[in-house]
Image (cartoon, rainbow, N blue to C red):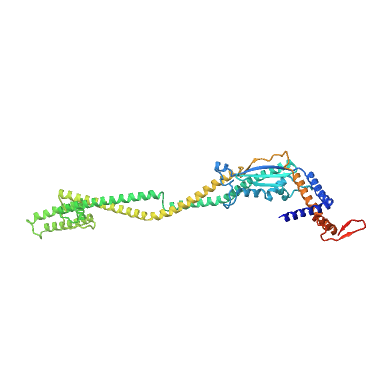
Length: 488
């Protein structure tokens, strides 16, 4: 341990001797470097930094007005993406910075427009952690320019945001304007299809019609059942009257009543009865060959012929027995009249049943097609509703976008504009001087050791011998004429 300490002391002494021996050269190198550092430090111009702060936030005016709510929203495509980082990159974009250069007419020392990379090198844009705020800082030798550039960058970013939202609204409005005529044509076509369908099928309201048809159907069925019950009752009454008159066919009773009520038939019948009475009276006085009887018989036959002709005219091909009673009593006549009246009433009821049955058939046919009509109408109504909703939605959206175009909808606003800095940022003079001192020292040491390496070797050995305190190590003693000892 003691030996190691002695070796370290020997090394330090050796290094010090080297520096001591070449101190002039080392001091010269140190002086050159420190002089350069001092010149650089004191020739440095003051640098000013101005900072503007931008609040990046979705615009709430769209949600308050309810118009174009998607405008002014800040959205990301991925969950990992930070919207503020996107806005920072937008501020750093060449397009935005070039616009700032042109607006402020920023030029370099030669008078040409400043390049984007030169502006970007002095521009610092960063998001503030934990807040929706972006810091825009610019450094310049001119304090006023530093504030102007920082504010211009912030304002240009906001104006571009507003312009982008307006362009988005304009693009959407133009698209909707192109779609409106198509949707309106679809709406008109759907309305025409539904109207033609209703007109061709005579539809006012299928639901009401279906209910009315069902009500009418069962109402008619009840009427038919009631009428059939009445017909059955009338037929029973007619049968009773027919049994009383020994008449099996109601039509015969009608013919019989017509014959008895025919004046022409009854007149001939009365004349015939008079002739027959005359013949009966004269038979006791005359024979059948007498002219009187023959004449009466001829007259009777003629009357029979006329009677038959008049009966045929009244009967008109209806069933009638020739030997029927052509003269009936008042009671029989009333009964026959009742039979005729009941039969006419029955026929009227039967005709009514037929009419009602035809109505039922019509209703049944209509009800059978109602499901298909309802299905077709529902489909046409759905098409109409879709076309109407689409048109109304597009029209409302078109009007909203027209209003949105006139709004200043942006995603950011300046919450702290950049002020003209009164004092420069911390100077780098001390850092430059300290760095120069360190660099000068290292350079001086390097120069000292380099010169010592190329210096005369015996001198180095002599110094080494003295430093090691071993005067007889590796040397021979010579005595010169001066009497001094010399160690080689």
